[in-house]
Length: 256
Length: 243
Image (cartoon, rainbow over all chains, first blue to last red; front, side):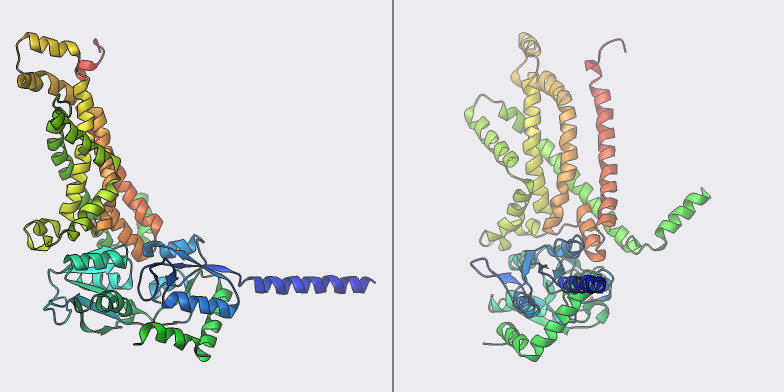
């Protein structure tokens, strides 16, 4: 009798323990900064969409959890994660060492280059500190492009920092900016595709030095949520194997 | 003294945020904020005096437009006014080709215009109240002396109104300093802009904003001190006698 009770209790205990281990990967909220077309933006009727959103939803479905998207401005996006406003960030965030000190990253899910964009009539040929002297450069505040431009061009050119990519495009249209530095897919969607002929890419795609441009986009978690990060890494591997990743990728980045 | 320097050195030992570079951002931000606030206050003050006189005019066509201007600029948020002036003007067709664009291209002048119009509206109302509360006896005495309207304004009404408006105007100056914190939304690197830059770069909201809050406190303190001095000098006749 006694032994049975002990067995029973330990069985219940084991079940509870197993249950709590699974419960570590629960329904979560994901922080995202919109608009950043085509990675994350709203359709005309207000729905969130974009490569990050579609891939994020597919990952959550693969793990078997509900994910809710929380919109948060870029310059407060990491503090928001620390303040538990959401449990993850999936918002075109480049993995780099500075950010690694603050957050835990998933494996990279996408590696875009950065690129310079200027009005079609611009006569800038290559963006060097000498050629951009005295010009006004637009960047989004707190992005790795901001850091790169500030450190390399901050002494010779004016750097205008914007809260959103939209404000920057507005000022570019207004003629207040000579050149902007953006994630290439975003610049292509907002400046090249949607305003045919007004803008052009200057120079090459930029992915070096790694100190600034890091290792591609990752999903950011709080340092202690290792299990959550592992769950996303596994799901990402599965989606890459079964072709779902490729499907979403070609929806956004390949010519239709 | 020895221990104090040691304490500061210890504090700065693993400081990666407040380097010479970020401190220079704060320094430039301080200059920009002071320039912006000072210029808008001076221009706003110059505009507000005739507007306040006109606001009390008997002629409806002088009084009503000024009332409407004050109503609009006091009735809408400064942030909205700034957005309209900075991003809104762009939608006027062909403005890039006119001389106006030379001054509107950079964010400083649009912000200065927004701040000036805003503070002028508030200052107008402050002065109007002070002018209106001029003792009736003083005006009657001035009339009895045969002073013209202009002479009466210049010698009797305005000097005493300015003195009475001083404490309220001191408040407006401090409000303007704090309102200038929104300048960074149109890419101006003012004090708050510098703090937001440091915050975004080092993900350190406490350090970045506490530091800038301390600078704002120092600025506010010097404004308070200046106005206390002015009040002491200029309002001496209002004190109880025998002290």
